[in-house]
Image 1 (tube, one colour):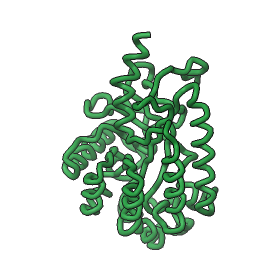
Image 2 (cartoon, one colour):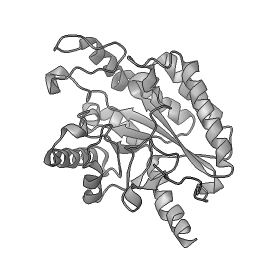
Image 3 (cartoon, rainbow, N blue to C red):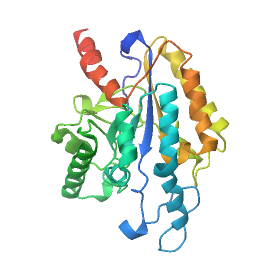
Image 4 (cartoon, one colour):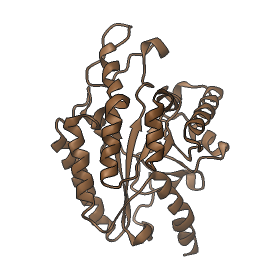
Amino acid sequence: MVGYGRNLPKFLWPGRKSLAVSIVVNYEEGSEHSHTVDRFVEGVGEFLPIDVPARDIGNESAYEYGPRVAVWRILETLAKFGTKATFFATAGALQGNAQAAKAIIESGHEVCDHGLRWTEHYRYTLAQEKKAIKRSVEIIEEVTGKKPVGFYAREPSVNTVRILQEMGNFIYDSDAYNDDLPYRYNGDGILILPYTPDVNDFHFMSPMHRFATSADFFGYLKDTFDVLLGEAVSSPKMMSVGLHCRIIGRPGRIVALRRFLEYVSGFDDVWVATREQIARHWIEVVEPALQAI
């Protein structure tokens, strides 16, 4: 409940930048709740979920737009602006589209472990969660050629962080929404790179519907960026942007991402980086400098 408080750390991002911007693309379509798999009907989508215990064919089709079409539009947009993003990827989604997985890696983006499927980790027993995370790491390594160094459960359990720390390959976790800067879990545990529940295209979806148009989302992106950049003059900050293939990748919504990346490119004091890059800079440069003070 205290965090850094008024004692904000004094440091700089690479190139003496003051604001780090992390673009996150959730690549998870095909891993959502499905009645045929886990007996749940997914409750978030372009439509309200159906009201009977059966497959929701309409929402399943809307999710399919992500890997079939939207991921390519997003990759093209990121390439246009030279932006490297972090893909929160479920192992199941990566397995479901080898072409897209290959394109993500070859484009230089980071793949962060987003679990096997959308099973909320609080539903697992300790043994089940250990097994699931171990398997997701194995699949991601098989697909990408590299073990993931970051993790995002979406809905963690009380055991998630402890499991990650025991595994050895993870250097950061993003299952927190409580700060504008990285910090150590319980003071000396795994590095936490906070994520964002608000600067997130998730709010285009039913039942939230907080954003109706690309202008709504771009306005929120810009306002967040402007405030953090202003604060970063005296104390560096980190901004996260949460995106989902099936959402931001729609023609009428991709405009917001394009406008934002173009806007950000006009500022010299900004470092757009993957979460792995941010975590490694924090661990290798920032923490040693702060400890030396």
